[in-house]
Amino acid sequence: MNIELRGGRVIDPLQSIDRVADVYVSDGRIASVGEKPSRWQADRVIDAHGCVVSPGFVDLAARLREPGFEHKATLESELAAAASGGVTSLACPPDTDPPLDEPGLVEMLKHRARVINQAHVYPIGALTLGLKGETLTEMGQLAQAGCVAFSHADVPLPDTQMLFRALQYAGTFGHRVWLRPQDPHLARGGVAHEGEVATRLGLAAIPVSAETIALATIFALVRETGVGVHLCRLSSARGVAMVRDAKGDGLPITCDVDVHHLHLCDVDIGWFDTHANLMPPLRTTRDRDALRRGLADGTIDAVCSDHAPVDDDDKQVPFGEAAPGATALELLLPLTLKWATELDIPLVRALAAITASPAAILGVAPPTLRAGDVADLAVFDPSLSWVVRRDALRSQGKNTPYMGIEVQGRVRYTLLAGHVVHEA
View 1 (cartoon, rainbow, N blue to C red):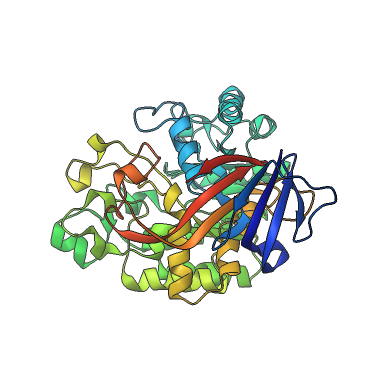
View 2: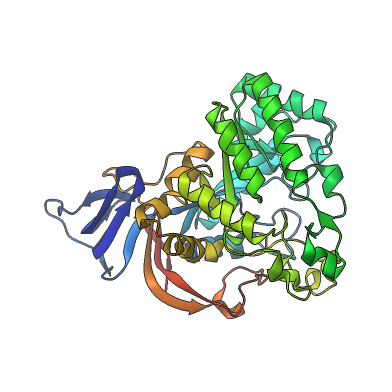
């Protein structure tokens, strides 16, 4: 099928392209940008005037809730949400039920995603069997089944020796390990940042040192093993400073931040708003501003949604008992644009944080508009405002601290391998 996207502002961070041009798609691939192919005949023309045509977005953390948590969301609902948000590739953490610790589970997930065909799904394998921290998984077999990296998700791994062995084992096969830096002992039972808000509300707290101590341990083990580590979802100013220093020392590390921590702080908990119960917890305005600057100066490599659909029953309870997490696949674009606008970041750089940079961390071919490459595209109106309402979200999870808030930037079309999988 031949598709012509006419008159849009074409932005491709990988090629440093930012210009108005027509984009021609044929047989699932980019045929040309700007110059019409010879004997071209379009089967469909998409009017992209006033819109940006960019590579599809890549999300480093999206919980699809299958297998095991279908009461929270299904693969169908969350991949539809991904398409609605312009996300054409996503990584799913291993904390499903059962965890992604067995090749058959990974193959089943990949097969289901291919059948639904609304986004490319890249499973992150479990570091240990059952995420129990006792026995390492067969990483080689999991990689053959489709895992692109290995993680313990948000499940504590308090045994430092086990982490050391996991890094050594991963390094033997050239696998990358993803870790969320949080000391399980200091964070045990905590639900909010240790500060005035948690004290006033009487909430069990998690200090910043839970992150910095974990970072120090990870950096020491990286120096010892030489194995590359991706740090998932930094949350503090001190954490950003430590990562900046570690990168300056040449450690093979990358890191990301979720879109919520770029805009919210612990004050946004308000009077026990469980939609603001996130993990890691929302911290101070100083921490939030440091994360924003860290992303701007390249200390933080990428932005993720940290999408975590939760059913209403798990949110309509006291704050300390609520399941942490927020739905965000459809908010990845507008919240990234909001950060870029407020810090005066060029659009091409902002889009790099949700396209080329996360693709490099995943170790997959980056989405691009180069002729001959797969046509994974997002067409969005950067000036279109919309209000976040339950009926405006395709995700089965309606849990977000942005409910009722007006945001700017809406995806109009998403193309996956040259097929329109979303249009609005």
